[in-house]
Length: 420
Image 1: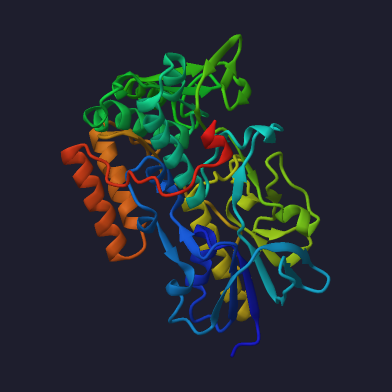
Image 2 (image 1 turned 45 degrees about the horizontal axis):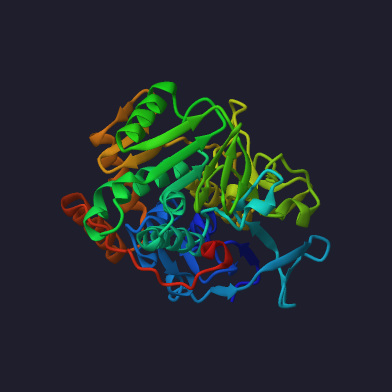
């Protein structure tokens, strides 16, 4: 067994790419994650909106490396890092010694100082988050079917999504399709087509990271789906009864949060500087300042491109960083020093609903059906395993042809927030 021990914390896109590319490097690897599965986050909203099941976008990490004897997988939660002793401490008390440490611990929801909104405005970062949103959406229709009070019924049939980035836009579009196209024939006491889907964005346009032309197309596509888009005013209060936008209070029993993220506490563990989102500010080779044996990648890291713009927190960027760190480790094992990390932008994609999407590849910008097909093919390509690719492709084809969502099961008990 190799003497050099690489500890990787986080089994997301960056962490897995790193472990994959370290095959044959002659190092011993320990991969730690607080969950036992790798999650394909770009399709998480489709679990939340009844299109896909959890098993179609997540895979057990142990199974992925069952044929790699140099890789040890641990289910654990890191509580701290001691760079002096080169050790990582887990919450269960276990301590891991490392020669090289890679922190790829991702990010979670950020409520801009209003963490009291979290119980009622559900974020979307994990499978648990997705199934919670799915349960709340489906329960809202079920409760509206039996509600005797019209005001309560209206509140149950009002779905509010806060934040008009890709996740918010995708959630809003699919919930609108679910209400207006999939469910109408299944209820007798309510007309699901009268449901309101409201997308709230404090900024001046939806999908602000895309060029204005594509943002305008996305706004029109959302309107065509029946989504009511509120721009230019932030949410100032969020309760189990609804949200406050400026002077207006909108009653709603189902609120989803897609407005901000906060990095893991990796910067605090290492005692280094972080940006406003808590991401560790790293060197050009993705190492922590003054700690050449510690790398920080993915949503946990703040990385600047040559142009001065930050590297976006997207899956392709994390994968590129994981691959780069693997090259650095390979080179160091041979006594060499690789060049600085360079991010290669591969394009931006977002879907608004069935047959509506936008794609920005720099000089080439697409919208509509062609962009939707490119979006779908790209996502299927990056899924792990033939079974998952076939299953997701079949689910999408079935919905495209029939308009029916197959994953409409309420499988969890209600929480306090659901009961209100």
